[in-house]
Amino acid sequence: MEALQRLHNRGSISTGAYEVDNSSLYEADDPSYIRFTNISTYASSARKKKFSMSMWFKLAEVGKQQMLWSTAANGYLVVQASGVIKWQQTYSGVQKTLNTNRVFRDTGAWYHVLIVVDTAQSTEADRTKLYINGVQETSFSSATYPSQNDEAQNVYEQHNYIGTWGGGDHSNTGLSGYVSEFYFLSEIAASPTDLGEFDDDTAIWIPKEYGGTITSPSSYLNFSNASNLAEATSGQDWASGNSNNVRQATDTCTNNFCTLNPLVNFKYTTNGITDGGTVFGDNTGGGVGGAFGTMAVTKGKWYWEVKLTDTVSHYIGVSAVDDGDNVTSGTAASDPHQQNSTFRFNISAARIEYINNGTNTNGSLDAFSDFHTAGDIIGIALNMDDNQISIYGNGTLQSGVANTSIYDAADKMVVPFHGTINDECQYNFGGFSEWTPSSAASDANGYGTFEYAPPSGYYALCTKNLEEYG
Image (cartoon, rainbow, N blue to C red):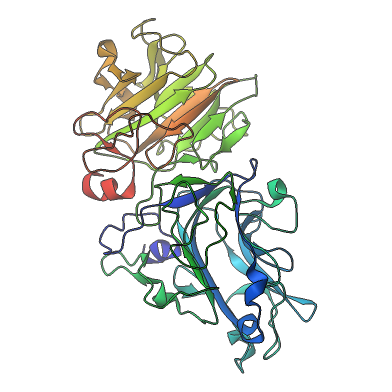
């Protein structure tokens, strides 16, 4: 178990004294990125020989290239479509690369990555080091290193980017996911313990406050200024306002929120999960496309919201995840809303539907109000302590189906579930929402940002709350 926890930060880490409040969210299709301009002012031989770059990131898509950081040309850190992490930097016209053997594909996890370059080192492998969650990567499918005292090209000569490769098409090379705690440290060969530590209780790698001095051209971005996410917290600003379609989130490496999971392949393909794992749509026409949340629960009381942008057909509720693999593509299973001990609210029919004693069962039509016009916001209140579920329409509890039994999903591990045909919706688990909630209501612990206040005793699906109630 410790090995899994060390691999990535998925669980609760509230025992850490250092808290990260914000992250920046990128969507490759927009495209979105932050750019550091006028860096050539700081170019020098010493700076080209020694520097470090550190960030926490959480992926929202897989199976495509995810650019984390790059120069305008010749240097980048990327998660490849295969899931391996690649570092590439050019020295004296020759590209030097590190390609991990391990893959990094967990869209429910925050990862910390640290690159350290110090070409003055006499040992070749010490001139470029890659750390993931505090542990140095030493197993590579390929590894080449700069010559001693060689100077990195383009780190200072042109722009630096977070979220895309500056030398290419942003939509084809962009990140779809979150970044927090970004550091670029000039003339510093950082140690991972400068930026993080293993939690004593869980052995999970967690961030800590950097104790060094940060002056230009070094830079630290914590993304706390929603109106200017390129603003440096300390050190060199990445040029005022110099960001494109980057949005602020509260899903961070110290409080990880549930999102929608692109790793689950349902019988019918969909047009994807986007915008940090919060927007889901289907255009198959042949059957119900499905989506699961990244966090599963067996107890506690939980709340999340769904905004309908297309309104023909939606099934909203929960699905058990311990009934086997019968929702995945390539099986003979029927639509995902009729699988895995699912309980759902059929929005167009205004009725409940569920698996009861292994049989798909439909409740009465019009059991709750018709609120499936575009812009309507549905709230789900899941009570796993009593195996019940309730639905809210634009903040109003639908009393006719309040505290309904979840039938076969009772006493199992369940995840948020959505099924739809040719429609789109926007999810809000509290860490980010595509729409801006007008009330900015949080749960009783102060976590999440919702359109409507969660019912008393119900909480956002995030690791802080899971530690306490889950």
